[in-house]
Amino acid sequence: MDHGREPGRRPRLMLPMLAVLSFAAMGVVSYVLLACGDFEDACAQQEQRARIATVTRVRLSRSARGICAPRGALIAVPRDQHEVRTMVDFCDTATAADVPALRDVSLSAESSLAAGNAVRALGRLHAVAKDPELLKLLNDPRQRVRDETILALGESRDVSALVLLDPLVRTGDAHVRVLAVRAVGRIGGETARRMLEQVAADAAVTSETAAFASAGLAASGR
Image (cartoon, rainbow, N blue to C red; front, side, top):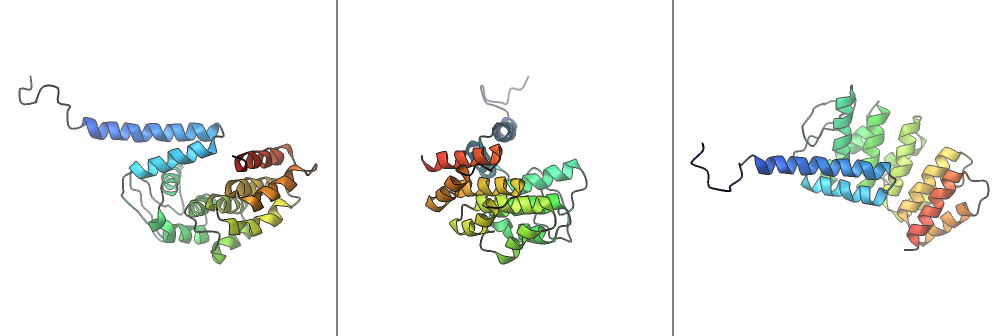
């Protein structure tokens, strides 16, 4: 029997354990929200996760590798599922201090998965729309990188990106068009609204594109 502990006092390990469990639970909630298509709430959950995540940083260039739990590491060439998860976790919680490393991986990583996640993180950090080198990724030979760059423009919420998205919204490629419409909807504003109205009035668009255009218009009307 432990006579040295004060009555009702919790063991010291309880608080760290509760913090870890809380962090994990929030991660599960954010992934469920994403699966249900509730992007705004999922983004809010991810931002909350970022605020309570361990401040430990691992910034790796193309020539370095590493793993730092629980935050993760920016791995340019993930070799297994664990390293993929580690890299994704890093990108999900990246901050402005990580922009140089993310930019390096976006422009140089051979892995389209790593480059794509890095450029999406840069969009969330508002570091894509005005960077000429990153904008060249719209023409990258790898589809995943092109797709993530389009979505990154939406994540940037930068109205200047609408000029770049306009020709993609008008393209005959249904896959590219739906991504561009999603990005325009994320940016919002009057110009975006006019673009989405034109898409919604186009009888030739796919049902998926029309759905994203309608969702964007509904959001802009709030």
